[in-house]
Length: 275
Length: 265
Image (tube, rainbow over all chains, first blue to last red; front, side, top):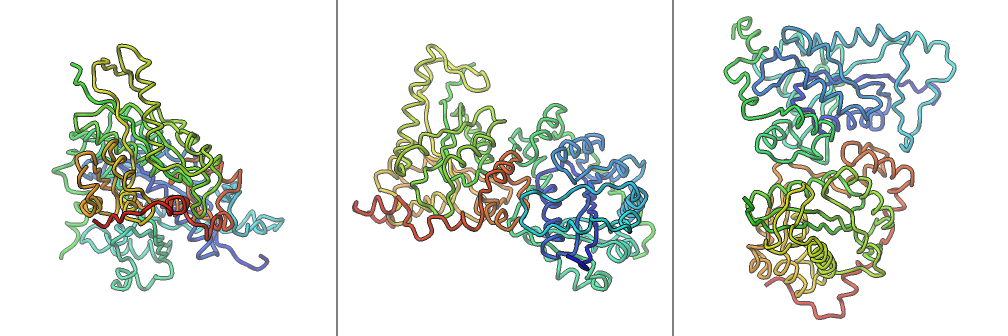
């Protein structure tokens, strides 16, 4: 209510989205609920899906144009989650920290004309922070929203993989921006944070959301099912299922793409690191 | 060349309180599995929501559960919702429901003289085997056969023996164990098809109701049209969850008079 300061925040998810699944979409919903209800002093104004570029060279990664389009189809019914193709259009792989910076700047730039997407669902029973909108003259020149990286626990734990991340990038993501991490069964993000000085230092910026109801729809599983001619209906939005069928994506052949190629970050950092 | 597959209809009985993506996945997984056996051609799927007489805690009115299931399955070209069970004045035993639907299926396929056509337009000749109806369920359902008073022995025999089960497992449940632990089920092992869902998906109607009570999002767990319906009718609140609290589940009450044979063979 009065004097209750609410931080506006946008969520950015980077990844292959190869293909996007209901699980990816659930991550956004869980993150938003967590920040707005459990943590309480946030209002999530936007969700951004940023599919990785083809330059990432991950095995089985199909063309970015398809992955972007599938994500667009998947988010058509969402009033707050959007897809941004910027990263996918870059010729070379772009470090996640750069992508975060890019989107932070973009959000700041459109701030003046920004109509916040109304993320209030009409049946939610939580208190509606309408006060934020009412009359205050400072609304137009308010700070741009905070931007947090949204990810699964596997991404958090990938911080420990040699040559996959630059230390200063990790520091920037958790220090300057923030991380919200959805745990799937079997991962121990809190323990991982505890064991890393770099992460521990910014633990207040790292939100861990427990997904009590395991929903393990991995894109890997979906691709496997498709290769074997099995139904993936109800694991992905219908529009995405149709798109995959229409374009005959995901075959044994497509899964072999980049099979002999080294993942871009490993290639880039392996030379630089002297371990 | 016509491979003389047995035309098969899958029937799912349950509360569907509400229907979820996971329910609809069951049909997809079951169909894929039964096709791969080489013996069956799945020609239809039926969702049969239980009647209000079931008395389960938190059960909202059948008219809503049926409406939501219809919305969810609008886009399906082979699974439909059937209201017969939900309209019966009292709770109906699963075996009785199966008998009803089997009668319907036999009639339906008799009408098409000469050929049988499934939803994909594939035709098989009438000299092919008569259609079958199997009960589609999750692995937790198999465990209910063990609950004293919930099932009549002769009904378990009928469901497993005469009709057959297609049971989809997920998470940590072991349907093989449930079959093994029951003499009746073991006897009809060849008529019990176990399908494994490798994706661990614990989404359940219970979890969906819990999330709705707490104002949390259920998007991507159930179809948007069902979410909208729920909000329009303000279903699934703390009040709705208390419905039937303390009431004895109807099958237990109805079958209490009859001798209960322990299934702990």
